[in-house]
Each structure stands twice: as C-alpha cells, then as structure tokens.
Image (tube, rainbow, N blue to C red; front, side, top):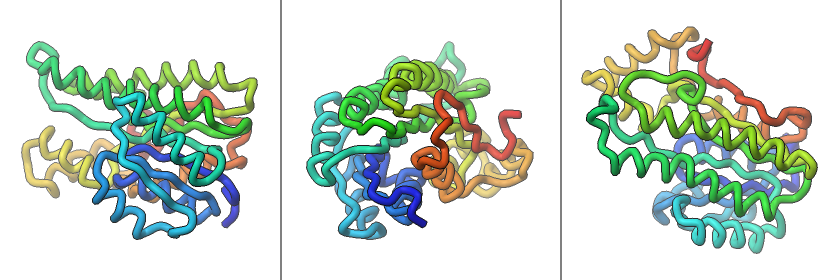
Length: 252
C-alpha cells in the first residue's frame, strides 16, 4: 500500500491501543509518524513496532500548550513537514451521577479531552501543509450519551463542535477536519470502563456491552485505525466536517 507515501503524521496518545494501531496502519501505507504520549517507556515500546527510519516520538502532555507546540516543532524538524494530525489522547473519568460527580475529575477530563485536542489543532494546523487532514477521536457517546458519564460525554460532544468549526476555518487551505466515533473497542481502556460500569468480571462486563452493539462484538483497534488511515489519505478528499461512526451500529 502507498496511499500515504511521503506523508508525515503526528499522533497524540500514540503509545495507546488506537494510537499505535493507527501509526502501524499509516506506516504500512507509506507514511512517517511522530508519536506523543505521557511516558517515554510506553513510547519506546511503540517505536519498537514501527519502522525506525519513519517513526519518532516525544513525551508531551496535551493539556500543556507549550509542550504540544514543542512536539509539533520536533515532528516538523525530524521529518521536514506535517500533513496529518490525529488528536487521539483521552481519558474517561469516573462513573457517577452528576450530583455526586467530583468536580476535579470533571475538570481533568475536559482538560485532556477538549483542551488537549484544541492545543494540538492550534499548533499542528499552523504547521500543516495545505491539503492535509486533521482527525479527532471522539466516541460513540459523542453522538449519543448515557447516565453517569457526564464528564466523558460532555467532552466527546464538545469535540464535534470543535471539529465542525475547524472544518470551516481550514477549508480554504484544503485541510480536511473530521471526527471518528468508535464504539467499544477491545483494549484495556474500554475494559476498565466496562468493569466499572457493570461491576462484574472483565469477561462478563464485556458480554453485557456486546449485547448493546448490533454487530454483537467489540471493535479491534486495527478496525478503528483503518478508518483513521482512510481519513488521512486522499481517498477521503471530499470528506470534511463529518462525524464518522465506527461503532458496530451502536449509535443507530
């Protein structure tokens, strides 16, 4: 595959499940990738799975504008340009009714999930080449919602507003901006949420969630990553301002 040959991508949350799967999909399609995440050890493990000559990384906290700006500068210094940005880093918070929801947790979720993508967009879009692509990872609950997840659902809905605003702002430069909305994905992040929500074993909790999904199973990280790679490529050249559900029918 060469759909992304010569392209350079910046991925936040790059050492995580969907971030790394997306990096693998993009490098398989010919791109170079620059990963940012919170822990050097996790980034080192991720880099071991990627082609050394087309992958690099830096520690950065997306809630810190200066650190994000430095990461964007490092990516462009390493690879000479920036064509693709995937705002993927995110956290969940806790499960609690709004009357009991810890205010500090609510603020932290919004800082990571909303301020983080804003920082990435602010600095990456200023550096991106015309005709590029910004992809924002929201969630199925950015299209729907449920009880007791006020911080997470609020943050993921907010990303749709950010995405639509950026799509209109960047259209004159031919830079496309879209959001993806994954449903339950088979990774540690999702299974932790399921156990907290259901209060049963990981397997039992996963089964309950799968009963909510029309396709009857969790996504794999690779399935989400293929959609990210599509939106990064010129194959999606007339798609911008779109909310792309990758949820097995959960939001229908």
